[in-house]
Amino acid sequence: MITAAQMRAARALLGIDQRRLAALSNLSLPTIQRMEASEGVVRGNVDSLMKLVGALGSAGIELIGDNQPSTAGGRGVRLAPNQPG
Image 1 (cartoon, rainbow, N blue to C red):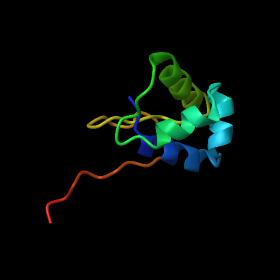
Image 2: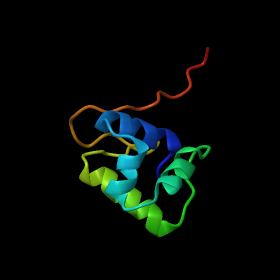
Image 3: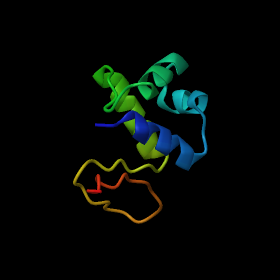
Image 4: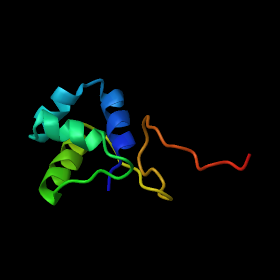
């Protein structure tokens, strides 16, 4: 669904803080803080996750999952797969 790293990157792209993301998604600030403190995939109830993803989508954020192409133009971030080293 969405990872904590994607949440932080999305906020950075939008230039907003956690308080603004909470307002946009109609969630509490502690909920946003807890989500961003998660390891890996964000845990939460389905309603909260849908509000978060919907708010990010409305703000122009496209979430890209593993092994999925980006379907639209524009700026974004993606972690490169681990390179043998």
